[in-house]
Image (cartoon, rainbow, N blue to C red):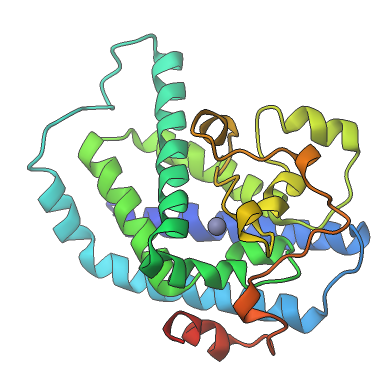
Length: 262
Ligand SMILES: [Zn+2]
């Protein structure tokens, strides 16, 4: 059986994140950082994530052959052929994927059509591990289709895509989780990767704070491209999450689906 990239996408973009969102939900319930949101809120997040996964999978499966065929006529670069020592080559490929997601995320905040879709993710004013699953189906399709088009274009090694997907599955649930963790440990981790406190700055209701810390795993891209905001610049006690024009919604699936078209 040949595994197409739509199946691959399902595995790395949804099955892993669902598993770890569930895992971190159990942890944050036991060790919450402040007040924990209502069960119904978390349940809707999981249901909405499930619906998005299903819709984007069906859509991408129908177009995977045409994208693969279209991209394979290009022959710009070939990341599957290491010219450097292998460990260095694959590490750079891993970083390249992280940069693709950073760039996509930053564009989603600055192009109004993309922001309309992405603000569904930011609408959650109680960010928890389950928030990591809340993406509008159209955004999921756009992000997955463009990212995978780039991977096909550069002939990204499958092993690197899978490794990135596995690491990101754990990390994305971790950074959204509402857990208490030792400040020293969080401070040390934040030198290299995003932590829950750093990512919550990105979910701030104040868009000067929200338009920062776009990175997926590594902090290097925000630091290099001047979109970085450290934890020390923000009062976490006063930090409010969500978006201004979507405050205190009756949190339900239909409202979330229709939010981009308001
Ligand atoms: Zn964002």
